[in-house]
Length: 94
Image (tube, rainbow, N blue to C red; front, side):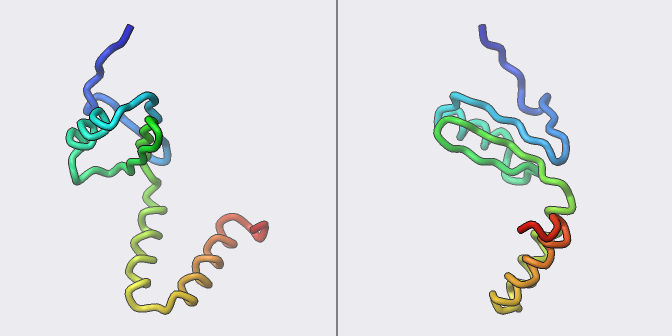
């Protein structure tokens, strides 16, 4: 038995993800079209599995900060800052 649920009826909470299996390429493209270009979720598709993720706002802020810094900083400085950030977030066990 299969059911159809419109995508606008599905809510993915911040920091959570939804995996859909056995999705073919045509269904994947239809889902992308329905979600549109300006979506808050991140999409990954590999080998018939579609993952839709909603990153936490702090991850998006960090991404934006590093993208902006990447325009003006040398790569070695970006790596150093990123490792300092990871150490602060995850501890010294890296």
